[in-house]
Structures are given as C-alpha cells and as structure tokens.
Length: 192
Image (tube, rainbow, N blue to C red; front, side, top):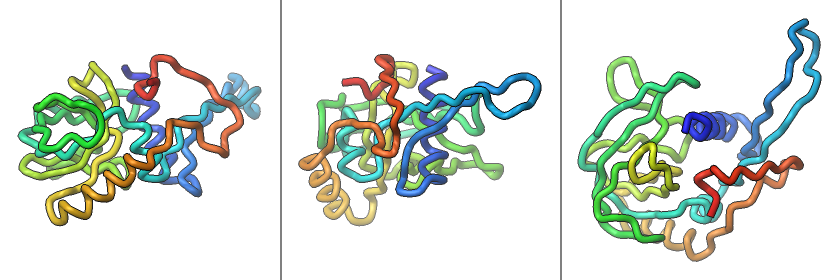
C-alpha cells in the first residue's frame, strides 16, 4: 500500500510542476561515488489532465456528504498523510458505491489544525460538506482512495452536470502521451 501512496503523492507533486499536466516521475540509479546517474528509469502514470481522463480512471463517482473524519494516518514516505472520512452517498454517478463509505485521501496537515490539498482538484473532505468524488479501490483505506474531489455545496446543478458530462465522454486510462516508457503494474488501483 505504501507503494500506491508514494505513487499518488508523486503524481500530485508532478501534476503541479510539469507543463500540460504531464504525470510522470523518474527514479535514478545513482552510484555511491556521486557521479551522474548511471541509468534512469521512467514510469508513465495514467493521464489525468481533464475531467474525462479523471472520470475514466475512477471506478466510482458519486455525490457524497461527509459525515465525519474517521482518522488521520501519518505516512513516512512523504510529507503529509492519509485522511480517512466516513461519507454518505447521496447520488451515484458512476459505478455502484455502497450507501455509506469510508474513503482515504492524501492531505497535508496544517500547523493550526485542518488539512491542505495536495493537488488543485483534490480538496480535503470536511464534515458537513458535499462533494463529487471519484474513487479507486484500495482496501487499506476502507472502501477506496479519493482520486479527485470537487466541492458541491454552492452550485449542485452545475457541478453534477460537469461530472455527468465527463462520465458520458470518459476516456479509458492511458499513459500520458509525453511518456515513452510504460510499465504495467497489475497491483495498481487503476487496473480494471
């Protein structure tokens, strides 16, 4: 599970830093004598630049209400941790999620309390608020891992129409076109 957590954290960081939202990362095999890397290996992750990409990657998409924060887990591979929230499914949009779920997401813990997002379309779930969330299976975090979260408190019709349209035009998971070294990982939550 830590591999999935690390992959999602790296994806969040690279999505912010790369142009055109390219989602990839590189690990380097560096010799101990501090010379330049001997070899570089790239792994292409699914493209998730558009709503249609996100809808294709998520196994379930639903309008939810956050009931409560269940727990915060500090994780040692990267800054931040995992926030687990108990939610009620108000309206399923894709897939058949259970009526209530416990779902995890990557967050950064703030000094004064509360949580910060790790990427732009990844709002920390707050109790008492509505969101449209896309999830991927991940039993280590209950009923799944939040792939994206969009606030739905203010204009429910607009946000529901946005994600319904994205689901209608969803794109199957595919590597970012900028990548040329694809590694299939059958343990990935994105594997259909």
